[in-house]
Image 1 (cartoon, rainbow, N blue to C red):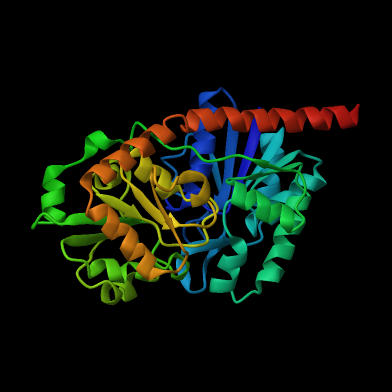
Image 2 (cartoon, rainbow, N blue to C red):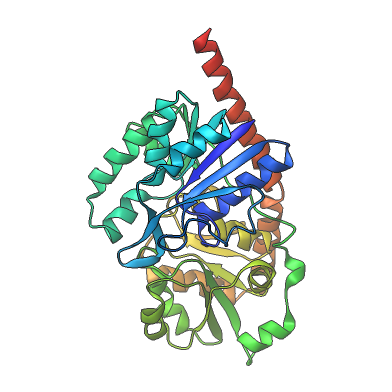
Length: 377
């Protein structure tokens, strides 16, 4: 199967869309398929990007500009490279990863060429547009609906996202969750030396991993910073990094970490806290669970599918810093509870590997292709 993956983000970017697009390409190659990725260039005017060594398949980069207020995110500019890539690759199907700007153009090009499309909804683009672009949420949803309504199938990462899409009039929506690398993220990587470096007085280590951006509300960890015997560790970068140095007194801000180093940090935490209320899935929650770490997350969106309160962690009211503090404190006081939550979390994600969800994705592709064939007949 020849698949063109049109994605709004791709490595070296670090975010959920980028990671999922990379894993999709890897799964396709591993199964003997022939993918091609089309993504924004990582620097203005870059025609041939040198950052694609991680990709298992060719990558076509289109010109892009940094998003105002968040230069780490780049927005693709109009370019003939996209349509040319679809033609040159002789695509059987077009996979649109979190389509909004480049993905909308990819959808239009696929429709013109009468190519089947699978659109993957992954980002709360309404909230994102409201936060960074000044676009009203209703306007953003009109664009989302227009793009996804043209797709043969839309894949939602969680039941909350699926419900949201259906409520906004998006047709032909099915569930497709995200995988997690249970070989990379595992409890055995817990590192005593790293823990001593992060918490030299033996403090309980409470961590956040993700973008440092306004919609993530990492400042909700401020009350956790005030707890006796607790050290907050923040991993990631983004436009809120400077403000968080002030907002989180005593916290260790480690910046961007990746790969095995990130996995070692995850496994060395005692509690993982996610604070953002706009997660359609929340991959870092799965990575914490795979690492055997109990989770505190907001009771909204993707975490509702991942965290079982009283079994793998706690779900708290979104935006409630006192609830976050109290949930952490309850776990801090009970090592046995933390161990039980961590073990249950690891067990819960054992079957959620990228291989497993890769099989599910191929099934979606095959069903879409079969439906197209049946209509043509």
